[in-house]
Image (cartoon, rainbow over all chains, first blue to last red; front, side):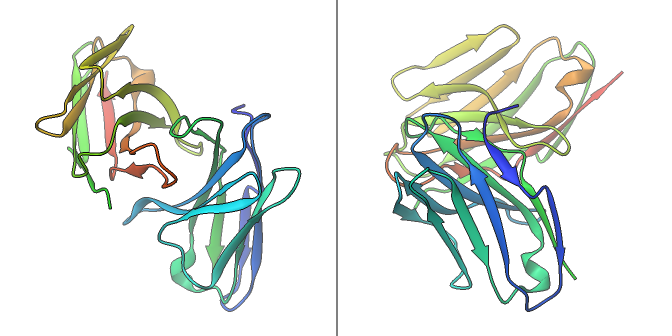
Length: 111
Length: 112
């Protein structure tokens, strides 16, 4: 157990729908990062939050958004889902920039 | 932004032999280079890392080397074992707000 908790582990939904992925960071970690992992694109950085505030944005689509709550858990919202959004979504947390601890991921399947 | 290239994409070695995975990066400001191991159904797990003020770091059978001038770094696994079979990712970051930039991964297969 890495200490980073992601729920749900699996999610199957239809095109056009909206889903929310949840991440609880490791105790004491203020930063949360979201990554998308697909076979052809590898691990792509989506967005980072630090202590409730957005810190950096990567290759995140406008249909996707995220937030970090006062208890430091984070949610990634994916809307108007397309088949191509099917992927593994990982959350990582860190207390120091670069020392990431990853969760076990959410596998999203859009049908 | 940073770009990380990783080779090979697949590496098959005999159990007991050594394995080497190589990565290059583009941003000279990058100063932290971790390596992650990802097993099937799990998230990436940090196995070793190196900072730009160090040329080599070793942890038991795993070592990482860094050549800042050439902007490349490598992972060396000696005396490979079946449990080393996994996908390995290199990554780089400048330590700023941006996330790690990952290589595309190397699928390491240990042949018995």
